[in-house]
Image 1 (cartoon, rainbow, N blue to C red):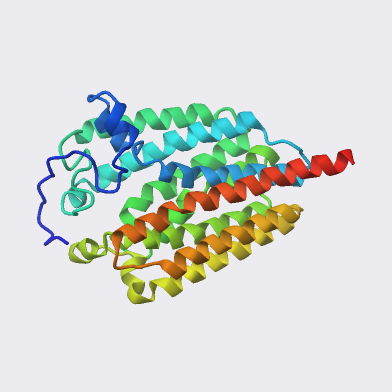
Image 2: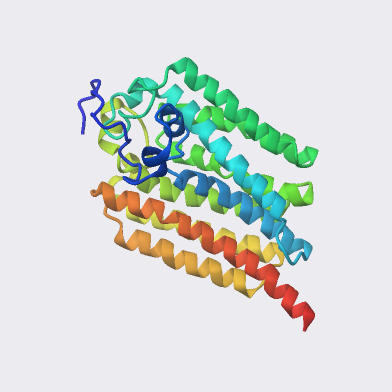
Length: 322
């Protein structure tokens, strides 16, 4: 907890929620480390959570098209794009929040408030990573390119949302899961109802897991006059997150039904719903470590749904051979 005044960076430059043994701190050259931290390469969970909606939508579209193998080239392109755009978005967010971060215990050691990276250098990093994302994007059809570019308006607005609303997690969800539309469009060249259902489910998913994450900062946010669903729902967070996860699971099932997915996909969604139920049942909003662990476990949710979709394609192929 803070008093809202500036906090002096701690002697260690590692940020609070980075794994103690992350590769940036252990292996990266010292001159690179501030920029790698700025792009959150020491904390890959955000990249995974940005990537999975892209992969889900791509593979769901391929299930709908009757394909038997995922397009590996597109999977790689989405992986590179997610890595670059997550780094870009985080650096932009930190640039906007550079004064706020210096007054929050968890973020005081970030590269900008700690003085490791200048605001000008951070903006240069934003431009460089955005250009990498653009190079990746140019490998897709024109509809997909313009659809992806349209997301930049929401991305640009997100860092300001907590200054004006108690629901910045909703704005994050709208921005962070745009890949659920882009992945489908990359295969189909348009947006279909399955993609819209998948996207809506992913938005609810993000609102849920980011509410859990926001409980780490609720005391600082309250002192600084910032909004979050963690503060808004307080002791009712467990019920709220449960509702968000429930809506996410239902919409993912609807997306699969609309796309013509098979039993293995629906089983995967049921399994991830059980995992999300575990998050809710064991959540302790007064324990930061508990919140961070449950937030990070959403990588398993993403992986399980993706594996279910790939298995759907593979089993359809085997069934066709029979």
